[in-house]
Image 1 (cartoon, helix red, strand yellow):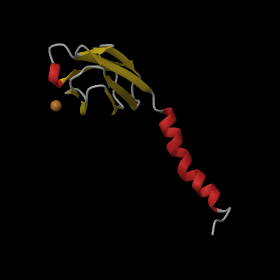
Image 2: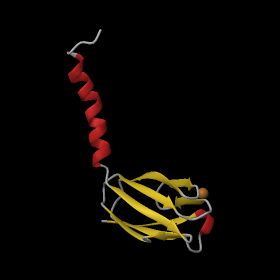
Image 3: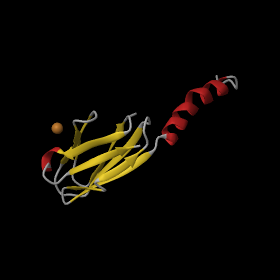
Length: 110
Ligand SMILES: [Cu+2]
């Protein structure tokens, strides 16, 4: 049987998740011709951010960094989400493991 007294509990359980999801700053990187666009992305320091990586190329790529923990495959014509940070201010390189000569970029954390 449903009781009205459950409502505050449900709200308390659900609302923090909604608030966290809504407050996560989100940035988009597009892979096109095996390059990241933009190849420099400014994100806020000491903040967990969500990167949406859109692969417009007809081949898979792997978003990867040695400067922060990240390694995730992006299939052709697909989008993935990667959570990054919180990071200290600075410059953090990333690359596409499958096309390293061209697919490189920098997170500028400030
Ligand atoms: Cu890798």
